[in-house]
Amino acid sequence: MSTDTTRLTMAQAVVRWLTQQFTEIDGERVPLFAGVFGIFGHGNVTCLSEALEAVQDTLPTWRGQNEQSMALAAIAFAKAKRRRQLMIATSSIGPGALNMVTAAGTAHANRLPVLLIAGDTFANRLPDPVLQQVEHYNNPTITVNDAFKAVTRYWDRITHPAQVIASLPQAVAAMLDPADCGPAFLALPQDTQELAFDYPTVFFEPRTWAIPRPRPDRAALAAAVELLKTAKKPLIISGGGVRYSLAAETVSAFAASRGIPVVETVAGKGSMTHDHPVHAGPIGIIGSTSANALAEEADVIIAIGTRLQDFTTGSWTAFSKTAKFISINAARFDAIKHQAVAVVGDAQETVSELDAALGDWKAPAAHLPHAKALFAEWNALLDGHQAPTNAPVPTYAQVVHVVNTLAEDNDTLISAAGGIPGEVAKGWRVKSPNTFDLEFGFSCMGYEIAAGWGCAMAQSGPGGAGGTPIVMLGDGTYMMMNSDIYSTVLSGHKMIVIVCDNGGYAVISRLQQFKGVPGFNNLLKDCRITDPANPLHVDFAAHAASMGAASRHCESLADLEAAFAWAKGNDRTTVLSITTDAYSWVPGDADWDVGVPEVSNRENVNKARAHQIEIRAKQRVGV
Image 1 (tube, one colour):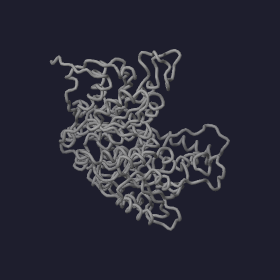
Image 2 (tube, rainbow, N blue to C red):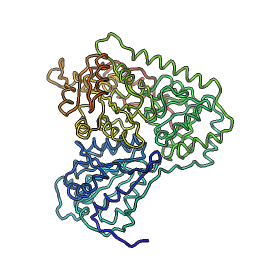
Image 3 (cartoon, rainbow, N blue to C red):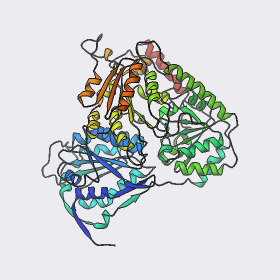
Image 4 (spheres, rainbow, N blue to C red):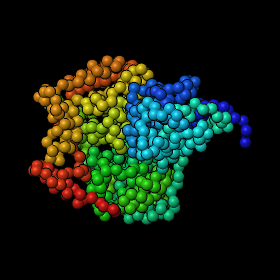
Protein backbone atom coordinates (compact mmCIF):
# COMPACT_ATOMS: atom_id res chain seq x y z
CA MET A 1 0.00 0.00 0.00
CA SER A 2 1.20 3.51 -0.77
CA THR A 3 2.81 5.42 2.10
CA ASP A 4 2.10 8.80 0.48
CA THR A 5 0.34 11.32 2.69
CA THR A 6 -1.54 14.55 2.14
CA ARG A 7 -1.47 17.22 4.82
CA LEU A 8 -4.88 18.79 5.34
CA THR A 9 -6.95 20.20 8.14
CA MET A 10 -9.63 17.90 9.44
CA ALA A 11 -12.33 20.04 7.79
CA GLN A 12 -10.47 20.01 4.48
CA ALA A 13 -10.06 16.24 4.69
CA VAL A 14 -13.78 15.73 5.31
CA VAL A 15 -14.72 17.84 2.31
CA ARG A 16 -12.13 16.31 0.00
CA TRP A 17 -13.27 12.79 0.92
CA LEU A 18 -16.92 13.69 0.31
CA THR A 19 -16.09 14.94 -3.21
CA GLN A 20 -14.51 11.58 -4.08
CA GLN A 21 -17.57 9.43 -3.33
CA PHE A 22 -19.68 8.34 -6.30
CA THR A 23 -22.76 6.30 -7.13
CA GLU A 24 -24.50 5.04 -10.25
CA ILE A 25 -27.95 6.14 -11.37
CA ASP A 26 -29.40 4.60 -14.52
CA GLY A 27 -25.92 3.44 -15.47
CA GLU A 28 -24.37 6.90 -15.10
CA ARG A 29 -21.60 7.51 -12.55
CA VAL A 30 -22.48 10.61 -10.54
CA PRO A 31 -21.30 12.18 -7.26
CA LEU A 32 -22.83 10.46 -4.24
CA PHE A 33 -23.21 13.87 -2.59
CA ALA A 34 -24.89 16.27 -4.99
CA GLY A 35 -24.43 19.33 -2.81
CA VAL A 36 -24.56 21.00 0.58
CA PHE A 37 -27.29 23.05 2.21
CA GLY A 38 -25.57 25.38 4.64
CA ILE A 39 -26.10 28.16 7.13
CA PHE A 40 -22.74 29.29 8.47
CA GLY A 41 -22.12 30.49 11.99
CA HIS A 42 -19.46 30.01 14.60
CA GLY A 43 -18.45 26.37 14.61
CA ASN A 44 -18.60 25.95 10.82
CA VAL A 45 -18.00 29.37 9.23
CA THR A 46 -14.19 29.44 9.38
CA CYS A 47 -12.73 25.98 8.85
CA LEU A 48 -15.59 24.05 7.19
CA SER A 49 -16.71 26.92 4.98
CA GLU A 50 -13.08 27.49 3.93
CA ALA A 51 -12.95 23.90 2.71
CA LEU A 52 -16.37 24.05 1.01
CA GLU A 53 -15.59 27.32 -0.76
CA ALA A 54 -12.59 25.71 -2.43
CA VAL A 55 -14.72 22.94 -4.03
CA GLN A 56 -17.91 24.86 -4.77
CA ASP A 57 -17.75 23.98 -8.47
CA THR A 58 -17.82 20.22 -7.75
CA LEU A 59 -19.74 20.20 -4.46
CA PRO A 60 -22.06 23.23 -4.63
CA THR A 61 -23.21 24.87 -1.42
CA TRP A 62 -26.72 26.32 -1.26
CA ARG A 63 -27.58 28.95 1.34
CA GLY A 64 -30.55 27.99 3.49
CA GLN A 65 -32.94 30.25 5.38
CA ASN A 66 -33.58 27.89 8.30
CA GLU A 67 -31.53 24.92 9.44
CA GLN A 68 -34.55 22.66 9.79
CA SER A 69 -35.94 23.47 6.37
CA MET A 70 -32.64 23.03 4.54
CA ALA A 71 -32.24 19.58 6.11
CA LEU A 72 -35.82 18.78 5.09
CA ALA A 73 -34.94 19.82 1.55
CA ALA A 74 -32.05 17.36 1.68
CA ILE A 75 -34.44 14.60 2.76
CA ALA A 76 -36.81 15.30 -0.13
CA PHE A 77 -33.87 15.22 -2.52
CA ALA A 78 -32.89 11.75 -1.29
CA LYS A 79 -36.50 10.59 -1.55
CA ALA A 80 -36.81 11.80 -5.13
CA LYS A 81 -33.55 10.01 -5.93
CA ARG A 82 -34.88 6.87 -4.23
CA ARG A 83 -31.99 6.93 -1.74
CA ARG A 84 -29.33 6.65 -4.47
CA GLN A 85 -27.91 10.18 -4.26
CA LEU A 86 -27.68 12.33 -1.15
CA MET A 87 -27.35 15.88 0.13
CA ILE A 88 -25.52 17.32 3.13
CA ALA A 89 -26.81 19.90 5.59
CA THR A 90 -24.44 21.85 7.84
CA SER A 91 -25.06 24.23 10.70
CA SER A 92 -23.23 26.11 13.42
CA ILE A 93 -23.25 24.99 17.04
CA GLY A 94 -26.11 25.54 19.49
CA PRO A 95 -29.52 26.58 18.16
CA GLY A 96 -28.41 26.11 14.55
CA ALA A 97 -27.66 22.48 15.23
CA LEU A 98 -30.78 21.91 17.32
CA ASN A 99 -32.92 23.29 14.52
CA MET A 100 -31.90 20.24 12.48
CA VAL A 101 -33.06 17.71 15.10
CA THR A 102 -36.65 17.77 13.82
CA ALA A 103 -35.41 17.07 10.31
CA ALA A 104 -33.26 14.22 11.66
CA GLY A 105 -36.38 12.74 13.25
CA THR A 106 -38.21 13.03 9.93
CA ALA A 107 -35.41 11.23 8.10
CA HIS A 108 -35.13 8.58 10.82
CA ALA A 109 -38.86 7.78 10.83
CA ASN A 110 -38.99 7.62 7.04
CA ARG A 111 -35.77 5.59 6.63
CA LEU A 112 -34.21 8.29 4.45
CA PRO A 113 -30.52 9.21 4.22
CA VAL A 114 -29.08 12.66 4.84
CA LEU A 115 -25.65 13.64 6.17
CA LEU A 116 -25.91 16.25 8.92
CA ILE A 117 -22.74 18.09 9.97
CA ALA A 118 -22.81 20.53 12.86
CA GLY A 119 -20.12 22.56 14.50
CA ASP A 120 -19.39 21.75 18.13
CA THR A 121 -17.79 23.38 21.15
CA PHE A 122 -14.04 23.22 21.77
CA ALA A 123 -12.62 19.75 22.35
CA ASN A 124 -9.87 21.27 24.51
CA ARG A 125 -12.47 23.18 26.59
CA LEU A 126 -10.06 26.06 27.15
CA PRO A 127 -12.50 28.83 26.11
CA ASP A 128 -15.50 27.22 27.87
CA PRO A 129 -18.24 28.23 28.09
CA VAL A 130 -18.48 29.54 24.55
CA LEU A 131 -21.36 31.34 22.89
CA GLN A 132 -24.37 28.99 22.44
CA GLN A 133 -22.88 26.29 24.67
CA VAL A 134 -25.26 24.43 26.97
CA GLU A 135 -23.37 23.27 30.05
CA HIS A 136 -24.18 20.13 31.99
CA TYR A 137 -22.94 20.35 35.56
CA ASN A 138 -22.25 16.63 35.94
CA ASN A 139 -21.04 15.79 32.41
CA PRO A 140 -18.89 18.31 30.51
CA THR A 141 -18.72 16.03 27.45
CA ILE A 142 -22.40 16.67 26.61
CA THR A 143 -23.29 19.34 24.06
CA VAL A 144 -26.53 20.02 22.22
CA ASN A 145 -25.30 17.69 19.50
CA ASP A 146 -25.95 14.73 21.79
CA ALA A 147 -29.64 15.38 21.08
CA PHE A 148 -29.11 13.82 17.65
CA LYS A 149 -28.35 10.42 19.15
CA ALA A 150 -32.06 9.64 19.48
CA VAL A 151 -32.87 10.44 15.85
CA THR A 152 -29.89 9.26 13.78
CA ARG A 153 -28.67 5.90 12.52
CA TYR A 154 -25.01 6.88 12.84
CA TRP A 155 -23.55 9.46 15.25
CA ASP A 156 -19.98 10.54 15.89
CA ARG A 157 -18.05 13.42 17.42
CA ILE A 158 -14.66 13.91 15.78
CA THR A 159 -12.20 14.83 18.54
CA HIS A 160 -9.02 13.95 16.63
CA PRO A 161 -8.32 14.57 12.91
CA ALA A 162 -7.48 10.91 12.25
CA GLN A 163 -10.93 9.73 13.37
CA VAL A 164 -12.55 10.73 10.06
CA ILE A 165 -10.62 7.96 8.30
CA ALA A 166 -12.76 5.38 10.07
CA SER A 167 -15.89 7.43 10.63
CA LEU A 168 -16.77 8.78 7.18
CA PRO A 169 -17.04 5.37 5.44
CA GLN A 170 -19.15 4.05 8.32
CA ALA A 171 -21.51 7.03 8.02
CA VAL A 172 -22.01 6.45 4.29
CA ALA A 173 -22.39 2.69 4.73
CA ALA A 174 -25.17 3.27 7.28
CA MET A 175 -26.99 5.72 5.02
CA LEU A 176 -26.87 3.38 2.02
CA ASP A 177 -27.70 0.13 3.83
CA PRO A 178 -31.38 -0.68 3.18
CA ALA A 179 -31.72 -2.13 6.68
CA ASP A 180 -30.03 0.73 8.56
CA CYS A 181 -30.91 3.58 6.21
CA GLY A 182 -31.46 6.91 7.85
CA PRO A 183 -29.62 10.09 8.81
CA ALA A 184 -25.97 10.19 9.80
CA PHE A 185 -24.58 12.92 12.03
CA LEU A 186 -21.10 14.26 12.57
CA ALA A 187 -20.22 16.76 15.29
CA LEU A 188 -17.07 18.71 14.42
CA PRO A 189 -15.51 20.60 17.38
CA GLN A 190 -14.29 23.91 16.01
CA ASP A 191 -10.76 23.52 17.32
CA THR A 192 -10.44 20.00 15.89
CA GLN A 193 -11.53 21.26 12.46
CA GLU A 194 -8.50 23.53 12.28
CA LEU A 195 -5.91 20.85 13.09
CA ALA A 196 -3.68 19.58 10.29
CA PHE A 197 -2.90 15.89 9.87
CA ASP A 198 -0.93 13.79 7.40
CA TYR A 199 -3.72 11.72 5.85
CA PRO A 200 -2.94 8.64 3.75
CA THR A 201 -3.42 9.77 0.15
CA VAL A 202 -5.18 6.51 -0.61
CA PHE A 203 -8.00 7.70 1.70
CA PHE A 204 -8.99 10.22 -0.98
CA GLU A 205 -9.08 7.84 -3.92
CA PRO A 206 -12.46 7.85 -5.73
CA ARG A 207 -14.95 5.22 -4.61
CA THR A 208 -18.18 4.16 -6.25
CA TRP A 209 -20.83 2.90 -3.83
CA ALA A 210 -23.56 0.39 -4.65
CA ILE A 211 -26.80 -0.28 -2.77
CA PRO A 212 -26.65 -3.85 -1.40
CA ARG A 213 -29.45 -6.27 -2.27
CA PRO A 214 -29.52 -8.94 0.47
CA ARG A 215 -31.21 -12.18 -0.58
CA PRO A 216 -33.67 -13.93 1.73
CA ASP A 217 -32.97 -16.90 3.97
CA ARG A 218 -34.09 -20.10 2.20
CA ALA A 219 -35.98 -21.47 5.20
CA ALA A 220 -37.85 -18.20 5.73
CA LEU A 221 -38.74 -18.08 2.05
CA ALA A 222 -40.00 -21.67 2.15
CA ALA A 223 -42.21 -20.83 5.14
CA ALA A 224 -43.64 -17.87 3.24
CA VAL A 225 -44.37 -20.06 0.21
CA GLU A 226 -46.12 -22.64 2.39
CA LEU A 227 -48.29 -19.99 4.03
CA LEU A 228 -49.17 -18.16 0.81
CA LYS A 229 -50.32 -21.38 -0.83
CA THR A 230 -53.06 -21.64 1.81
CA ALA A 231 -54.46 -18.22 0.92
CA LYS A 232 -57.91 -17.78 -0.57
CA LYS A 233 -57.97 -13.96 -0.30
CA PRO A 234 -54.36 -12.79 -0.32
CA LEU A 235 -53.42 -9.11 -0.31
CA ILE A 236 -50.16 -7.28 -0.99
CA ILE A 237 -49.37 -4.11 0.96
CA SER A 238 -46.76 -2.17 -1.00
CA GLY A 239 -44.64 0.15 1.14
CA GLY A 240 -41.86 2.65 0.64
CA GLY A 241 -39.31 -0.16 0.49
CA VAL A 242 -40.77 -1.21 -2.85
CA ARG A 243 -40.00 2.24 -4.20
CA TYR A 244 -36.46 2.38 -2.81
CA SER A 245 -35.62 -1.15 -3.97
CA LEU A 246 -36.75 -0.16 -7.48
CA ALA A 247 -39.01 -3.19 -7.15
CA ALA A 248 -42.31 -1.71 -8.38
CA GLU A 249 -42.29 -3.54 -11.70
CA THR A 250 -41.28 -6.81 -10.06
CA VAL A 251 -44.03 -6.56 -7.44
CA SER A 252 -46.73 -5.54 -9.92
CA ALA A 253 -45.78 -8.33 -12.35
CA PHE A 254 -45.82 -10.85 -9.50
CA ALA A 255 -49.23 -9.61 -8.36
CA ALA A 256 -50.65 -9.73 -11.87
CA SER A 257 -49.42 -13.24 -12.60
CA ARG A 258 -50.67 -14.56 -9.25
CA GLY A 259 -53.99 -12.69 -9.18
CA ILE A 260 -53.26 -10.72 -5.99
CA PRO A 261 -54.52 -7.15 -5.53
CA VAL A 262 -52.03 -4.51 -4.36
CA VAL A 263 -52.82 -1.72 -1.92
CA GLU A 264 -50.36 1.01 -1.01
CA THR A 265 -49.13 2.64 2.17
CA VAL A 266 -48.55 6.39 2.33
CA ALA A 267 -44.83 5.90 1.61
CA GLY A 268 -45.57 3.32 -1.05
CA LYS A 269 -48.13 5.39 -2.96
CA GLY A 270 -46.69 6.28 -6.32
CA SER A 271 -44.81 3.04 -6.88
CA MET A 272 -47.51 2.21 -9.42
CA THR A 273 -49.98 4.33 -11.32
CA HIS A 274 -53.56 4.77 -10.16
CA ASP A 275 -54.97 2.79 -13.09
CA HIS A 276 -52.58 -0.16 -12.91
CA PRO A 277 -54.48 -3.45 -13.38
CA VAL A 278 -53.64 -4.77 -9.89
CA HIS A 279 -53.90 -1.48 -7.97
CA ALA A 280 -56.75 -1.40 -5.46
CA GLY A 281 -56.12 1.88 -3.65
CA PRO A 282 -54.43 3.31 -0.57
CA ILE A 283 -54.90 1.46 2.71
CA GLY A 284 -55.51 2.68 6.24
CA ILE A 285 -56.83 5.66 8.11
CA ILE A 286 -56.38 7.99 5.14
CA GLY A 287 -57.04 5.15 2.73
CA SER A 288 -59.79 3.98 0.40
CA THR A 289 -62.93 1.97 1.04
CA SER A 290 -61.66 -0.60 -1.46
CA ALA A 291 -58.28 -1.21 0.19
CA ASN A 292 -59.73 -1.31 3.68
CA ALA A 293 -62.47 -3.76 2.64
CA LEU A 294 -59.82 -6.04 1.12
CA ALA A 295 -57.71 -5.78 4.28
CA GLU A 296 -60.65 -6.85 6.42
CA GLU A 297 -61.33 -9.86 4.14
CA ALA A 298 -57.70 -10.93 3.66
CA ASP A 299 -56.51 -14.24 5.10
CA VAL A 300 -52.83 -13.81 4.15
CA ILE A 301 -51.23 -10.36 3.87
CA ILE A 302 -47.86 -9.92 2.16
CA ALA A 303 -46.40 -6.70 3.57
CA ILE A 304 -43.50 -5.58 1.37
CA GLY A 305 -41.17 -2.81 2.48
CA THR A 306 -43.44 -1.31 5.11
CA ARG A 307 -43.02 -0.73 8.83
CA LEU A 308 -46.78 -1.11 9.29
CA GLN A 309 -47.39 2.11 11.21
CA ASP A 310 -50.80 2.84 12.69
CA PHE A 311 -52.06 4.87 9.73
CA THR A 312 -51.54 1.77 7.58
CA THR A 313 -53.01 -0.77 10.00
CA GLY A 314 -55.80 1.33 11.47
CA SER A 315 -53.99 0.92 14.80
CA TRP A 316 -54.13 -2.82 14.05
CA THR A 317 -57.93 -2.88 13.67
CA ALA A 318 -57.98 -3.13 9.86
CA PHE A 319 -57.37 -6.89 9.64
CA SER A 320 -59.07 -10.02 10.82
CA LYS A 321 -57.59 -11.37 14.04
CA THR A 322 -57.07 -14.68 12.25
CA ALA A 323 -55.22 -13.19 9.26
CA LYS A 324 -51.59 -14.21 8.79
CA PHE A 325 -48.75 -11.92 7.72
CA ILE A 326 -45.72 -12.47 5.52
CA SER A 327 -43.39 -9.53 5.97
CA ILE A 328 -40.71 -8.90 3.35
CA ASN A 329 -38.32 -6.23 4.56
CA ALA A 330 -34.63 -5.40 4.38
CA ALA A 331 -34.77 -4.49 8.08
CA ARG A 332 -35.18 -7.33 10.59
CA PHE A 333 -36.74 -4.86 13.05
CA ASP A 334 -39.65 -4.23 10.68
CA ALA A 335 -39.93 -7.77 9.31
CA ILE A 336 -40.69 -9.51 12.60
CA LYS A 337 -43.53 -7.25 13.74
CA HIS A 338 -46.77 -8.92 14.82
CA GLN A 339 -45.38 -12.46 14.58
CA ALA A 340 -45.22 -12.30 10.81
CA VAL A 341 -43.40 -14.90 8.78
CA ALA A 342 -40.35 -12.67 8.52
CA VAL A 343 -38.46 -12.78 5.24
CA VAL A 344 -35.51 -10.44 5.63
CA GLY A 345 -34.16 -9.31 2.29
CA ASP A 346 -34.27 -6.86 -0.57
CA ALA A 347 -37.79 -6.44 -1.96
CA GLN A 348 -36.86 -7.01 -5.59
CA GLU A 349 -34.70 -10.07 -4.94
CA THR A 350 -37.11 -11.58 -2.43
CA VAL A 351 -40.26 -11.19 -4.53
CA SER A 352 -38.42 -12.66 -7.52
CA GLU A 353 -37.38 -15.71 -5.50
CA LEU A 354 -40.85 -16.04 -3.95
CA ASP A 355 -42.34 -16.02 -7.43
CA ALA A 356 -39.95 -18.71 -8.63
CA ALA A 357 -40.70 -20.92 -5.62
CA LEU A 358 -44.50 -20.73 -5.93
CA GLY A 359 -44.74 -22.93 -8.99
CA ASP A 360 -48.13 -22.66 -10.68
CA TRP A 361 -50.03 -21.42 -7.61
CA LYS A 362 -52.47 -18.59 -8.14
CA ALA A 363 -55.12 -16.92 -6.02
CA PRO A 364 -58.70 -17.96 -6.79
CA ALA A 365 -59.74 -16.56 -10.17
CA ALA A 366 -62.52 -14.37 -8.76
CA HIS A 367 -60.32 -12.60 -6.21
CA LEU A 368 -58.65 -9.90 -8.34
CA PRO A 369 -61.84 -9.03 -10.27
CA HIS A 370 -63.57 -8.64 -6.88
CA ALA A 371 -60.83 -6.22 -5.81
CA LYS A 372 -61.15 -4.22 -9.01
CA ALA A 373 -64.91 -3.99 -8.53
CA LEU A 374 -64.36 -2.54 -5.07
CA PHE A 375 -61.82 -0.13 -6.52
CA ALA A 376 -64.31 0.97 -9.18
CA GLU A 377 -66.80 1.76 -6.40
CA TRP A 378 -64.12 3.78 -4.64
CA ASN A 379 -63.36 5.76 -7.80
CA ALA A 380 -67.05 6.53 -8.20
CA LEU A 381 -67.19 7.75 -4.59
CA LEU A 382 -64.14 9.93 -5.24
CA ASP A 383 -65.72 11.34 -8.37
CA GLY A 384 -68.74 12.37 -6.34
CA HIS A 385 -66.71 14.20 -3.72
CA GLN A 386 -64.40 15.85 -6.25
CA ALA A 387 -67.14 17.10 -8.60
CA PRO A 388 -67.79 20.87 -8.60
CA THR A 389 -70.85 22.13 -6.72
CA ASN A 390 -72.56 25.45 -6.17
CA ALA A 391 -71.15 25.73 -2.65
CA PRO A 392 -69.53 29.14 -2.04
CA VAL A 393 -66.29 27.60 -0.71
CA PRO A 394 -64.55 24.68 -2.44
CA THR A 395 -63.47 21.57 -0.56
CA TYR A 396 -59.99 20.11 -0.35
CA ALA A 397 -61.18 17.23 -2.54
CA GLN A 398 -62.27 19.60 -5.30
CA VAL A 399 -59.01 21.55 -5.17
CA VAL A 400 -56.98 18.33 -5.30
CA HIS A 401 -58.97 17.17 -8.33
CA VAL A 402 -58.40 20.42 -10.23
CA VAL A 403 -54.65 20.36 -9.62
CA ASN A 404 -54.38 16.62 -10.30
CA THR A 405 -56.25 16.95 -13.59
CA LEU A 406 -54.08 19.82 -14.83
CA ALA A 407 -50.74 18.42 -13.60
CA GLU A 408 -48.48 16.86 -16.19
CA ASP A 409 -47.64 13.20 -15.90
CA ASN A 410 -44.14 13.86 -14.54
CA ASP A 411 -45.07 16.60 -12.05
CA THR A 412 -44.50 15.51 -8.44
CA LEU A 413 -47.10 16.12 -5.73
CA ILE A 414 -45.65 17.00 -2.30
CA SER A 415 -47.48 17.26 1.01
CA ALA A 416 -46.95 16.34 4.66
CA ALA A 417 -49.23 17.59 7.42
CA GLY A 418 -52.69 18.86 8.21
CA GLY A 419 -55.81 18.02 6.20
CA ILE A 420 -54.14 17.85 2.79
CA PRO A 421 -52.42 14.45 3.39
CA GLY A 422 -55.70 12.60 3.77
CA GLU A 423 -57.16 14.23 0.70
CA VAL A 424 -54.17 13.61 -1.57
CA ALA A 425 -53.59 10.07 -0.27
CA LYS A 426 -57.18 9.28 -1.19
CA GLY A 427 -57.80 11.58 -4.12
CA TRP A 428 -54.54 12.13 -6.02
CA ARG A 429 -54.50 9.74 -8.97
CA VAL A 430 -50.85 9.03 -9.74
CA LYS A 431 -50.06 9.25 -13.46
CA SER A 432 -46.38 8.24 -13.45
CA PRO A 433 -44.33 6.24 -10.94
CA ASN A 434 -42.26 8.10 -8.33
CA THR A 435 -44.20 11.36 -8.64
CA PHE A 436 -45.86 11.38 -5.22
CA ASP A 437 -44.18 12.48 -1.96
CA LEU A 438 -46.40 12.48 1.11
CA GLU A 439 -44.25 12.70 4.24
CA PHE A 440 -46.57 11.03 6.73
CA GLY A 441 -44.10 8.82 8.52
CA PHE A 442 -43.38 11.75 10.83
CA SER A 443 -46.08 14.16 9.60
CA CYS A 444 -43.62 17.03 9.85
CA MET A 445 -45.27 20.42 9.46
CA GLY A 446 -42.89 22.56 7.46
CA TYR A 447 -41.61 19.76 5.24
CA GLU A 448 -43.67 20.73 2.23
CA ILE A 449 -42.12 23.92 0.83
CA ALA A 450 -38.60 22.88 1.81
CA ALA A 451 -39.23 19.53 0.14
CA GLY A 452 -40.31 21.32 -3.01
CA TRP A 453 -36.87 22.93 -3.15
CA GLY A 454 -35.06 19.62 -2.68
CA CYS A 455 -37.32 17.84 -5.15
CA ALA A 456 -36.81 20.54 -7.78
CA MET A 457 -33.06 20.00 -7.50
CA ALA A 458 -33.45 16.24 -7.81
CA GLN A 459 -35.88 16.32 -10.73
CA SER A 460 -33.40 17.98 -13.05
CA GLY A 461 -30.56 15.52 -12.41
CA PRO A 462 -29.87 11.85 -13.24
CA GLY A 463 -32.79 9.60 -12.32
CA GLY A 464 -35.12 12.53 -11.76
CA ALA A 465 -38.68 12.47 -13.07
CA GLY A 466 -38.41 15.94 -14.58
CA GLY A 467 -41.53 18.03 -14.34
CA THR A 468 -42.43 20.55 -11.66
CA PRO A 469 -42.86 19.93 -7.93
CA ILE A 470 -46.41 20.80 -6.88
CA VAL A 471 -46.59 21.57 -3.17
CA MET A 472 -50.00 21.43 -1.50
CA LEU A 473 -50.37 22.62 2.09
CA GLY A 474 -52.70 24.36 4.48
CA ASP A 475 -52.52 27.85 5.90
CA GLY A 476 -51.32 26.56 9.29
CA THR A 477 -48.35 24.76 7.78
CA TYR A 478 -47.52 27.70 5.53
CA MET A 479 -47.28 29.94 8.58
CA MET A 480 -44.95 27.49 10.28
CA MET A 481 -42.28 27.39 7.55
CA ASN A 482 -42.34 29.20 4.22
CA SER A 483 -38.92 30.81 3.78
CA ASP A 484 -37.74 28.38 1.13
CA ILE A 485 -40.05 30.09 -1.33
CA TYR A 486 -37.34 32.73 -1.20
CA SER A 487 -34.64 30.03 -1.47
CA THR A 488 -36.11 28.74 -4.73
CA VAL A 489 -36.38 32.23 -6.17
CA LEU A 490 -32.70 32.83 -5.33
CA SER A 491 -31.53 29.47 -6.68
CA GLY A 492 -33.81 29.26 -9.71
CA HIS A 493 -35.48 25.98 -8.71
CA LYS A 494 -39.13 26.38 -9.68
CA MET A 495 -42.08 24.87 -7.86
CA ILE A 496 -45.81 25.58 -7.68
CA VAL A 497 -47.28 26.03 -4.19
CA ILE A 498 -51.03 25.67 -3.54
CA VAL A 499 -52.07 27.16 -0.19
CA CYS A 500 -55.48 25.98 0.99
CA ASP A 501 -56.69 28.51 3.55
CA ASN A 502 -59.32 26.98 5.85
CA GLY A 503 -58.79 29.25 8.81
CA GLY A 504 -56.37 27.37 11.03
CA TYR A 505 -55.55 23.79 11.98
CA ALA A 506 -58.80 22.39 10.61
CA VAL A 507 -58.07 18.66 10.53
CA ILE A 508 -56.81 18.54 14.11
CA SER A 509 -59.87 20.54 15.13
CA ARG A 510 -61.94 17.84 13.44
CA LEU A 511 -60.24 15.14 15.51
CA GLN A 512 -60.59 17.20 18.68
CA GLN A 513 -64.33 17.68 18.22
CA PHE A 514 -64.88 14.09 17.04
CA LYS A 515 -63.54 12.96 20.41
CA GLY A 516 -65.93 15.21 22.30
CA VAL A 517 -63.84 18.31 22.98
CA PRO A 518 -65.29 21.65 21.85
CA GLY A 519 -63.29 23.46 19.19
CA PHE A 520 -60.38 25.01 21.06
CA ASN A 521 -57.14 26.70 19.96
CA ASN A 522 -57.06 25.13 16.48
CA LEU A 523 -59.25 27.10 14.09
CA LEU A 524 -58.43 30.80 14.32
CA LYS A 525 -61.97 31.58 15.41
CA ASP A 526 -61.54 29.23 18.38
CA CYS A 527 -58.31 30.82 19.58
CA ARG A 528 -57.65 33.57 22.10
CA ILE A 529 -57.62 36.48 19.66
CA THR A 530 -58.85 40.07 19.59
CA ASP A 531 -61.90 39.51 17.39
CA PRO A 532 -62.98 35.83 17.14
CA ALA A 533 -65.86 36.74 14.84
CA ASN A 534 -63.48 38.28 12.29
CA PRO A 535 -60.03 36.71 12.62
CA LEU A 536 -57.32 38.31 10.54
CA HIS A 537 -56.51 36.22 7.47
CA VAL A 538 -53.06 36.40 5.96
CA ASP A 539 -52.75 37.50 2.35
CA PHE A 540 -50.63 34.54 1.30
CA ALA A 541 -50.30 35.71 -2.30
CA ALA A 542 -48.94 39.08 -1.19
CA HIS A 543 -46.62 37.43 1.31
CA ALA A 544 -45.18 35.11 -1.34
CA ALA A 545 -44.79 38.02 -3.75
CA SER A 546 -42.69 39.83 -1.15
CA MET A 547 -40.21 36.92 -1.39
CA GLY A 548 -39.98 37.25 -5.16
CA ALA A 549 -42.46 34.56 -6.18
CA ALA A 550 -45.18 35.01 -8.73
CA SER A 551 -48.54 34.72 -6.97
CA ARG A 552 -52.30 34.94 -7.21
CA HIS A 553 -55.27 34.49 -4.89
CA CYS A 554 -58.08 32.38 -6.33
CA GLU A 555 -61.72 32.91 -5.43
CA SER A 556 -63.09 29.79 -7.12
CA LEU A 557 -62.18 26.50 -8.78
CA ALA A 558 -62.40 28.24 -12.16
CA ASP A 559 -59.93 30.84 -10.91
CA LEU A 560 -57.65 28.03 -9.76
CA GLU A 561 -57.76 26.32 -13.15
CA ALA A 562 -56.73 29.53 -14.92
CA ALA A 563 -54.10 30.38 -12.32
CA PHE A 564 -52.55 26.92 -12.45
CA ALA A 565 -52.17 27.12 -16.23
CA TRP A 566 -50.50 30.52 -15.74
CA ALA A 567 -48.23 29.07 -13.04
CA LYS A 568 -47.09 26.25 -15.33
CA GLY A 569 -45.92 28.84 -17.87
CA ASN A 570 -43.97 30.93 -15.37
CA ASP A 571 -40.19 30.75 -15.11
CA ARG A 572 -40.09 30.88 -11.30
CA THR A 573 -41.78 29.62 -8.18
CA THR A 574 -45.47 30.50 -8.15
CA VAL A 575 -47.79 30.53 -5.14
CA LEU A 576 -51.56 30.19 -5.50
CA SER A 577 -53.87 30.62 -2.52
CA ILE A 578 -57.52 29.60 -2.30
CA THR A 579 -60.03 29.62 0.52
CA THR A 580 -61.25 26.09 1.31
CA ASP A 581 -63.90 24.46 3.46
CA ALA A 582 -62.76 23.51 6.96
CA TYR A 583 -65.45 20.89 7.50
CA SER A 584 -65.78 18.75 4.35
CA TRP A 585 -63.63 15.63 3.94
CA VAL A 586 -63.60 12.51 1.78
CA PRO A 587 -64.68 9.65 4.06
CA GLY A 588 -62.40 6.83 5.19
CA ASP A 589 -63.22 3.51 6.83
CA ALA A 590 -60.31 2.63 9.10
CA ASP A 591 -60.31 3.20 12.85
CA TRP A 592 -57.59 4.97 14.82
CA ASP A 593 -56.53 4.49 18.41
CA VAL A 594 -55.99 7.78 20.23
CA GLY A 595 -56.17 8.74 23.87
CA VAL A 596 -59.61 9.80 25.11
CA PRO A 597 -60.21 10.85 28.75
CA GLU A 598 -61.36 7.95 30.91
CA VAL A 599 -63.26 10.37 33.16
CA SER A 600 -64.96 13.57 32.02
CA ASN A 601 -67.90 15.81 32.87
CA ARG A 602 -68.63 16.18 29.14
CA GLU A 603 -71.24 13.81 27.70
CA ASN A 604 -69.64 13.97 24.25
CA VAL A 605 -66.27 12.93 25.68
CA ASN A 606 -67.85 9.99 27.48
CA LYS A 607 -69.51 8.87 24.23
CA ALA A 608 -66.19 9.17 22.42
CA ARG A 609 -64.54 7.14 25.19
CA ALA A 610 -67.09 4.35 24.78
CA HIS A 611 -66.49 4.34 21.05
CA GLN A 612 -62.73 4.21 21.60
CA ILE A 613 -63.14 1.12 23.78
CA GLU A 614 -65.07 -0.51 20.93
CA ILE A 615 -62.21 0.29 18.56
CA ARG A 616 -59.63 -1.22 20.91
CA ALA A 617 -61.66 -4.41 21.17
CA LYS A 618 -60.97 -4.96 17.45
CA GLN A 619 -57.19 -4.62 17.74
CA ARG A 620 -54.79 -7.47 17.03
CA VAL A 621 -52.65 -7.61 20.16
CA GLY A 622 -49.37 -9.51 19.97
CA VAL A 623 -50.48 -11.65 17.01
